[in-house]
Image (cartoon, rainbow, N blue to C red):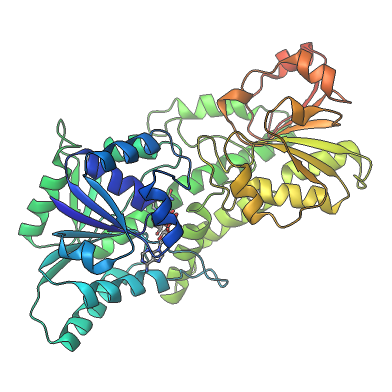
Length: 439
Ligand SMILES: NC(=O)c1ccc[n+]([C@@H]2O[C@H](COP(=O)([O-])OP(=O)(O)OC[C@H]3O[C@@H](n4cnc5c(N)ncnc54)[C@H](O)[C@@H]3O)[C@@H](O)[C@H]2O)c1
């Protein structure tokens, strides 16, 4: 099939590349000229396992194209995906400017009938508004073109995005005529060959499903963080509690890890957006507000442990931070816990030595405080002359500690583990103090 994907961020680039891998002809459009020029040369601005190789391979096969030219791309498309960002406004509502701008550009440039697929996460009712914008503009152009629009949320996880796209748990399709549904089913059939994973519903329910899914996952995280804090007060161990709770088939083990709070480009903004949608409809979501509040409080837990151990004045201390990305296998630092913790430590006078396998450049772009932080290209160099190691991202290379390296380089044998990945007995047997969350 001939497709265009608008927006070449995490979702757009993964969607376009994976669909080109299946033999479709895909044009990816972005307004960022540098990004497009880089992509044409197989330079990818994000780190996502396997993605770079697939982009290179499919450009070489002439299945995948990158352009800033809407008209050229749409002239060659039967289906057009909208995958631009929907960031949070200062008041917590969703900024839909990019999505509406794309709607207008599609309407101004389309020259044939097509199916429009909204993949960006948008509040309930937005897909209908996109439809209205396109209708209005087509009327202005006095041109007789038909289009159908569906909402098809994306559930990929950064760090495993290609795999998630290729092996989805479900494909949700909101709205669409029966002909559209058949076409979309055909498009995705190659990735869901062995199992019918399609769920069809109305547009509004599909829009809500995306928010409700993220809200459920965030709720599990905040719930476990709350239980972890109670564990600390009572002497219980959250790691044991997780195993005990997760073994109930009705509950399951996933998303039951206590830590420093959820972050990333989706959960914080999507929970906020859902709270705002509820408010707009005269409903106050007590549960979601609490999920958010627990998460905000959780961001202080590790910081408070550091202050308790080293005192309120950190000007004599240097800390090594391992991990800047909001989670492993990505270089995304949007709403990463590392930003907040490092800022707070520096505000207390601390010096930071930071290392991340992939996220140093993206961290530097966002983190404005350039004094008192040094970046290192390997984890051992970052340890030299520090007073403690602070683990913030669960990259595989941090799983097993080299105690000889640690002892040789650190001034003090202290580890703060913000992800609960280390075994207390083992760490303490090797002569280190260990601080974790809820255990
Ligand atoms: N990142 C994730 O893990 C994830 C997962 C599921 C859903 N989502 C949702 O998918 C959407 C996209 O997220 P993302 O993380 O890929 O965003 P992103 O910020 O990484 O990328 C958005 C891209 O859209 C481009 N863009 C903006 N306006 C444009 C326009 N008018 N025309 C063409 N391109 C334009 C930007 O230049 C950028 O490259 C959001 O709604 C997000 O909530 C994201």
